[in-house]
Amino acid sequence: MGIQAESITRVQEPAEASTSQITVLDTGGQYTHLIARKVRELGVYADVQPSDLPAEQLRSSKGIIISGGPASVYEPGCPDIDPIVLRAGVPVLGICYGHQLLAHHLGGKVQKGERGEYGLAHLTITSDDALWNGVRESQIWMSHRDSVAAVPAGFRVTASTSTSAIAAMSSPERKLFGVQFHPEVVHTHAGKQILENFIFRVCGATRDWDVSQRIPVIEEQIRSIARNRNIFFFVSGGVDSTVAYTLCLRALGPERVYGIYVDTGLMRKGETELVSRAFHELGAKHFLVDNAEEKFLAALAGIEDPEEKRRAIGEQFVKVQERILATQHFLDGHWILGQGTIYPDTIESGGTAKADLIKTHHNRVAGIQALVESGKIIEPLAPFYKDEVREIGRELGVPDKILARHPFPGPGLGIRCLCANAEGALTETSDGFLLPVRSVGVQGDCRSYRNVFALPRKPTLEDIQATAPALINSRFDVNRIVAICGSKAPMASLQVFEASITKDRLEALREADAIVRDLSVETGFEEQVWQFPVVLLPVGTETARESVVLRPVNSVDGMTADAVLMDGEILDALTAKLLNLPRIAAVFYDLTHKPPGTIEWE
Ligand code: XMP
Image 1 (tube, rainbow, N blue to C red):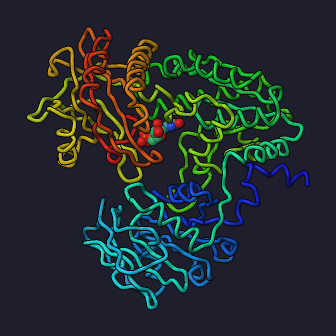
Image 2 (image 1 turned 60 degrees about the vertical axis):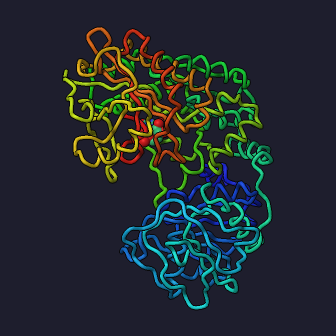
Image 3 (image 1 turned 90 degrees about the horizontal axis):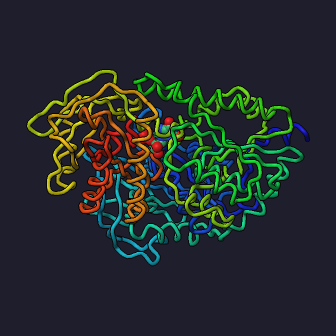
């Protein structure tokens, strides 16, 4: 019994939640988690499993959804399902690649696509179907290369588009359904209705998932896992660790839960004060701020290379945490480690596995590794998605200014303060300027560093964005396009200065970042974007040696992202304020999607 209890590492979802669960089989698509989230939003518990999970393990599911994915059913080693799943009598909905898998396994024909179909299309319903109850012909979102060319015996075509003759098919007797489009994304107007039809009409699921009602259950589980031990957290001020901490605080009381916040000196303006205040307001009694700024700055002095900077920051985290573990006696057997891990971080299947670079520096600490390996860890948010974590946070009274926060990288401003190891001039071309600073891009599975191309801001950002992809494709030395919003001196007179991370440069970045954030909050732009990094470049003049890059993006999970354009007048106002800062020579606006550019510049 003792060993059993020790090995519990997560607060699992309550047993009764799985009675009407929908299982999403993950074939590696970027929207897999979105499908499960949408089902949960309809009040039905859904989880994500590897696509090839044996059919036996799916018997208790009321319905199965096979996700989309980038593969082709003809590729060797492509994600597959246990074919018995399709004969087990449990309703199945195949989406995109899942739709093609259905056709492939049941004797239909999948045709390899040359051009594919990406973006909006109009759905024409060709036959009555359980999925179409209350659905009108309307806009859908397509994203596929291959397509189903012939339905399997016993299936009929239920919808088409101008380019996909078989946009949907079904065999109602066997409760098998396939759709080529993506009902889980908002661009498919009837998507929610289609999922509802499948879940309730076809699968007969009942509503059983209400996150706020789970709080007492989670608290009880925390008490049973912790038993007589106390819990400590390394908190960041981010949504997940704050909510996980607050749950533990409620479950065990303020005497038994410790929060440690490491001030690396790489934080945004006012961050440490804001987090300290918020934790005290939440009722924290043992909240320690560890001021490690000098150590981090010393470790970063003189380093230019981005990967080296990350490594130096990671190493410092390890050292600080080891010191804290020792001085607070957290390894003496009376403590367990609390973490804010959420559901997408726990899934290792298909293509959605995210070996989070972010958390590696925590895991590398030997003492923490030992706690994890002996099961002395508690992750109360492991069954939940971000929106659900926010909902729990709201119920617990976590302030909105914490819950509404954008994601912020662990290495903080350290990876937004770009460095250079040599001076260099900008190269002027007929289109714009090549900046000899290196920014990171996504090239296949690897990160690569290339230069940045700056284009004059034509009347609107849209005009430049329209020409940006062609420009990136035409040059091998560039992975990012920025618009020039304004500069104190002519662009041709700017240069790159040798620079590494210093307190002064961080201070300049903090000021610029605070100006951007204030205006962004004031104008409501903050709520329209998923994340808004502000980056400092060592590009300027002798008297003002830095530039600022604005990088607002929209994203679902950070894996891909779209550059978001800002209203021209607001951008003008922002540019003027930033150029008012004595050290800032120019302001740029990043127009690059991910891929080819990453969200962060390093
Ligand atoms: P990229 O730049 O890879 O970022 O497009 C995707 C998301 O991950 C965040 N990010 C990090 N978070 N430590 C973190 O905690 C890191 O080293 C790190 N690098 C990127 C980034 O802010 C974005 O949300």
